[in-house]
Image 1 (cartoon, rainbow, N blue to C red):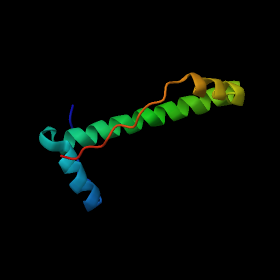
Image 2 (cartoon, rainbow, N blue to C red; image 1 turned 90 degrees about the vertical axis):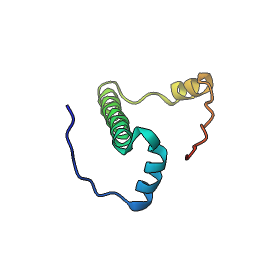
Image 3 (cartoon, helix red, strand yellow; image 1 turned 60 degrees about the horizontal axis):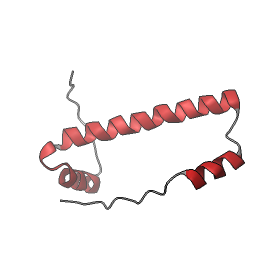
Image 4 (cartoon, rainbow, N blue to C red; image 1 turned 120 degrees about the horizontal axis):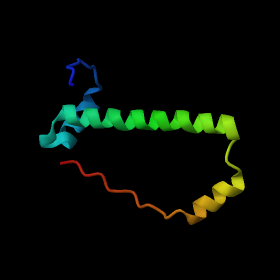
Length: 80
């Protein structure tokens, strides 16, 4: 189901978003951005719940994970 809405957006952000969206269209870009933001919010709530139930991850474990985790290169941001 799709619902049509009206939004007020910062004009500079809107200009850049239109360039990034290209042929896919602004609606698809905004929908994807909202989906990602909502996933992040659900993950934050889950992590807070787990911290409340089990306590925070010990610093030694965080350091161990950081050493084991591969370093990701930041992707270049292309604006068409």
